[in-house]
Length: 377
Image 1 (cartoon, rainbow, N blue to C red):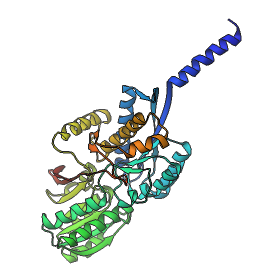
Image 2 (spheres, rainbow, N blue to C red; image 1 turned 90 degrees about the vertical axis):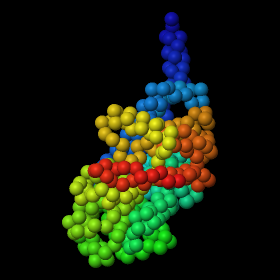
Image 3 (tube, helix red, strand yellow; image 1 turned 120 degrees about the horizontal axis):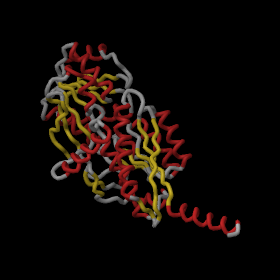
Image 4 (cartoon, one colour; image 1 turned 180 degrees about the vertical axis):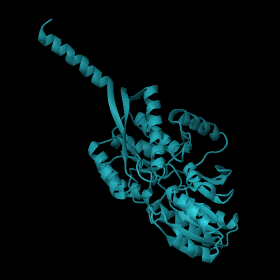
């Protein structure tokens, strides 16, 4: 065989291989360093599990066999780092982004993804502003702070019989947002916000603000922030003899909070809401997911790994249905998602990119474990 003929044959084979197998890259972004790295890693693991399952099952998009690649980035829960990562992903022309975890990183990053035309699904950012900026690329699969803070505020007054409450937030987009909605709901339900204090998402000493709150003799202390701060705060509340109920949003609704606060938590003292939840037959799928997750990673699900898992699989399902991983082609299909059967429940998006009928799961701590009280829609 002549060299030219051999070269042509090799070219034909390699071209055929290139056509038969391509790589589609989806990115996951979350804080895998810093105080809430346990939450970021939990989310990242959800993405890893989804990608491995998709590749193991075999993926075909537009008649072409595809290998899914996961690009993982750390935003450190910092807005500046978050936008730098977003620009990196835009420059890399990834097919889609799952993230970010925090509202404070998700919101500024969303502008960059929108400008680049890259679809973004946040599995956990709850500040309403995220999907109210008019960006066609922004989606979320959990309820927002209007629902989260509002539900907790009404629960504080109507169920826990809290007549006076103190509100603390960590000055982040998430913390301020959920605290504001909680305060509005408390007032609307007939309760009184007797104190409003603030700290930071990196603080460790709360004696000054807690001493002020102690003097108000409140029934409930609400904290808008994350578990890494809430744990030490609960310890200091105990040392100061503050026996009020302690409430917070999904940022404190983790198994890590119980470890961080230790014996500072008494039964039925801490109440929180996770922005999501399954009930009835849905529990079977969620329990199966949690079992697989623990077997694979050797750890319990913290909060949002299942929502990341669903988000990534949903994004890929839109690509398959559109017959393309080109964001411009699959974005309209993603936006039109209706009743996607996720482990977190059926997913449909409204015109803003928010999940329709998003659930909330109210939880409390009993016997050193988080226990579900009710799923509310």
